[in-house]
Amino acid sequence: METSRENEIKEFVRTRYSELARRGCSCSESAPSCCSDSKEAYAKVIGYKDDDLKGLPDSVLNTLAGCGNPTAHADLGRGETVLDLGSGGGIDAFLAARKVGATGRVIGVDMTKDMVALANRNKRKLNVKNVEFRLGEIEDLPVQDDSVDIVISNCVINLSPDKDRVFREAFRVLKPGGRLLVSDIVTTEKLPREIRRDMEMWAGCVAGALEEGTYLQKVIDAGFKDVQVMSKRDFKGVASSLRLRAFKPWN
Image (cartoon, rainbow, N blue to C red):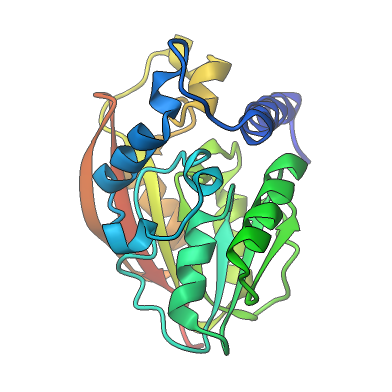
């Protein structure tokens, strides 16, 4: 059962990302980083290439709030089924859809109705047929057991107050031999209590971040094997963004 604190965090994060989905981003003195040119530059900094961004409407880029490109080294194959945790406006789901092809399938799950609605509008703009977006929480995925080949996530798991449950759910829905590919935030030092208690810092992907060793142990405790940190880079001084890969055993 969730605690009142966990509920408070989730509702605050839900509200913030609902607002982002509704307002989109516009170029203004109060939000200069929301200009489309800045968003494209930011996307390239965190790992997206020109070919990735080609053809994507501004409505996809304007809600990009990730810390990496989980599809870049996911080795997605034709016909595979991909699950995107916290799919937002859909960028990673759409990139995955290109790679798995018409015989593949991509499922995006997001806890905000506004983000799911935006992602579906973007889907119609792009005329993508092999993607669907579902409303749900990553701690309680609306996905069948042993049904997906790969789970991806982009700077979303750190937003959850119950990461153990998230990793257990990811393990549950993966087929035996399936893989987890995550871009996320971990801390490089102990965060002050005031940061941990700051709701804006939760929504900003810092307050909910765990120390790297603790984060990796939670992945292992969920049942994953061959857990690897593929790359890391500095993020906001007190944390690092990392790209992680892990596998669900065959038996």
